[in-house]
Length: 346
Image 1 (cartoon, rainbow, N blue to C red):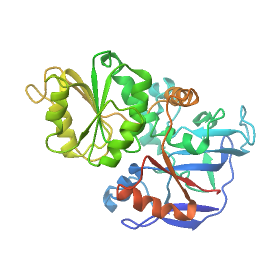
Image 2 (tube, rainbow, N blue to C red):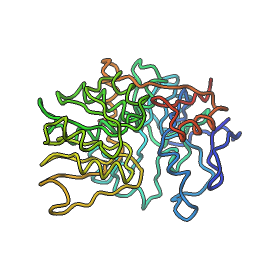
Image 3 (tube, helix red, strand yellow):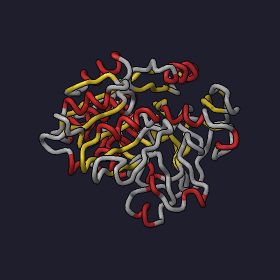
């Protein structure tokens, strides 16, 4: 089979040919319909050799949907040909967090060497994907697989972040969304579907701000040195009750702290390396700062339900598997509108 692999530290991903995998006991083999391209992949490929937490080569792709191609011994509840989405943050399935459905916060994953597909385990950017357990598959239920595949991360991650702050996203409140890219433009739609808050979106390009307005942003602000002041002006000086930073770079994190309201939430989702000091006087009183990771299996089901209801639709660009290196080039250059999706089987 063809697969897209990160093979050498510092090098671009390559399209290679590998043996077709076969499912062992308890496993499921998927024929991959679509796989998402994500900034998390670029973050991994930017790590120095000493910081990589797993060996190379690595088949990329932590967003995946496909059809069941074969079932390992003992697997029940699935049928060959069934269309499914992959829940990515695999856990042990037995610890206290996994028992709550929070495999994204599995307490034993590191100890047991369990890693997500595309982020340590072989990923979905291949013609076939081996899934370790059927519990990590969610029925697509008629959704377009190409538009649904980003929802497994670019939908699930902002949904989880928004749910944390639902109690503050009341009528009359303001939420600031920093970054209108793959996750940010989905977050805008989720916020409009789930809350009555005014949505203000910040980005560095007018193209991304236009996309934000197209998907429902009430206000857009150029993300520059005066962005925090602009948000405070829009809110009569109070600031935003919730700030969702999908960039996470030092300047955006600092801006998030400068624009958040008293008793507000700052949620840092992006992997840009920024940190926000917390302490008396560092932020407005009683501000909560969090850096969540992905989301739960139950939340993925809810995100797909929202998509079936027409509440969220991901803007996508599609690429053949041989074009995957180009997709990463475009993403790294900030030239992808929405989300890039690879079609491993055409």
